[in-house]
Image 1 (cartoon, rainbow, N blue to C red):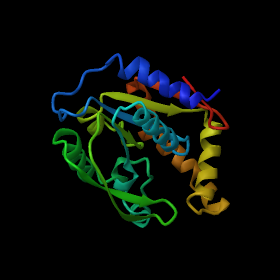
Image 2 (cartoon, rainbow, N blue to C red):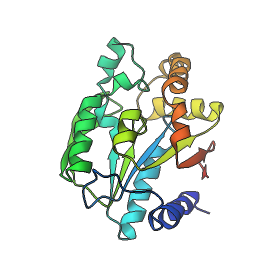
Image 3 (cartoon, one colour):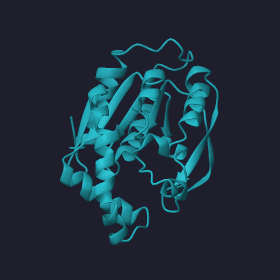
Length: 219
């Protein structure tokens, strides 16, 4: 059974069609839902968001996926300041807020900055227009400044400590080009930063999704 599809159906039937949350007053007329999808790195949030976007669009609900990694500072800038990616200071929060105001409040097309995890640098822009559903994908999507202003349905991905550490090591080596030694060297520090800055977001989630060792999902 495709658990991802099951969760997509759940979100459509139990959340969107039932209008389980109210639009925020400042939303542009076209927008009904702004989802936040947060949680530890490497748990499969982006794949989930891409699949949910396709599923809802196939169901004729105009949906757009907004990866927030593009608002990260370049890797060198973060390293120079000794900032974990989990630390809010590693993200250009003023730019993120102003960009979301344009998209969510004004209902205007934005130029979304793109970030390449392999190089640690930005790689251009992508034009995105608003839809009925906007999916904000990233650990800052449930940051106080974002959830209070923009999101009205919050999803949090979580797992046990061993799975989170293991999947993060794999992603750092396979997708970000780290050596095993580089990946291991900052594992403990990153895990501590996750617990400090991100884990508490689970208490603001409307839907919590558990991730297994093979990235299988359950609610």
